[in-house]
View 1: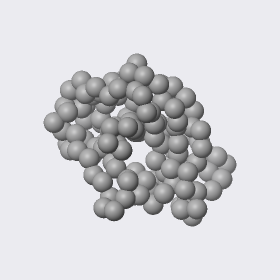
View 2 (view 1 turned 135 degrees about the horizontal axis):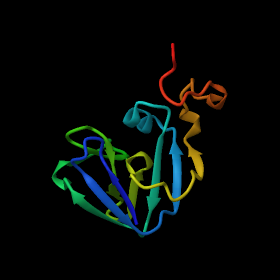
View 3 (view 1 turned 90 degrees about the horizontal axis):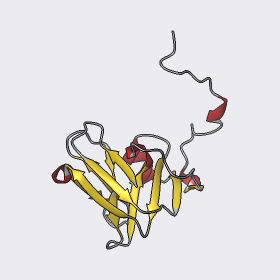
Amino acid sequence: MHKGSCQCGKVAFQVEGDFEHFFLCHCQYCQKDTGSAHAANLFSTSATLTWLRGEEQVRTYQVPDSRHVKGFCSCCGAALPSVQMEGQLLVVPAGALDTPAPLKPNAHLFVASRANWDQQLEQLPCFAGLPES
């Protein structure tokens, strides 16, 4: 059982079942969705999604002429799960989970579209919070 919510807390969900994959996708759609270098999504063909509250706040957007779908909270804009491919696939943004992600990423996808600044980032300084200066 996995639980999650949006940033404002108006939407909460649970996922019962297992995830088969955890991908970091660098496609241009995912970059636009997240405003970052990639999306981090968990995928399942067998898990069940249940909205615990706020289902009426959930919206989805599908990029025209594509299979790309994004679920999000209409109040705060936070990424939320979406059921895709006519109910055959559940996609859950890893950052939407309130419980620990059950697996580590399996692969980077669409690296040909990788942002030009998304290289060797593990070499940057790390801070526990905001830097002092």
